[in-house]
Image 1 (cartoon, rainbow, N blue to C red):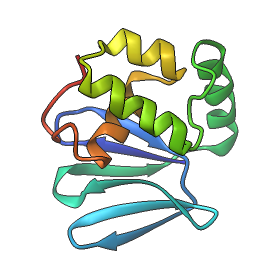
Image 2: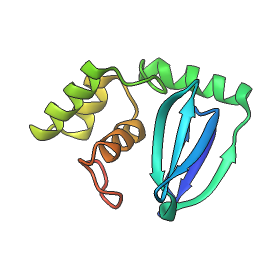
Image 3: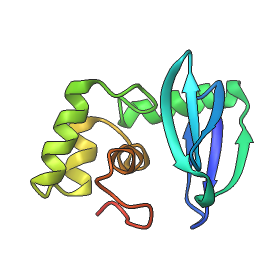
Image 4: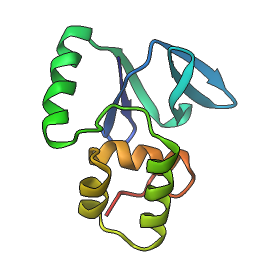
Length: 121
């Protein structure tokens, strides 16, 4: 698990076991699948987190957000895109998708629907 701290002091925890660099972006991988990417210029720091403490954090997060830290299915991604285009609120997205706000914002950024400096509203 990697903690990625971004330039605006925001951070996200990425369940990655490998990172690579691709055209100005840091790409995070887990078991051979891409699980996230951030523009290298936005990253202030990367920190390897204690796996045991992350397991507990994931378990706690999943009590309120059952899909927290899980891979996005094509169906969930399509639901996110449709809801976003239809003007769904942050709370509606969180409730419907069962994910945390940060995970939703990260996915929207990776899809090019939210810019790096935009916040999920």
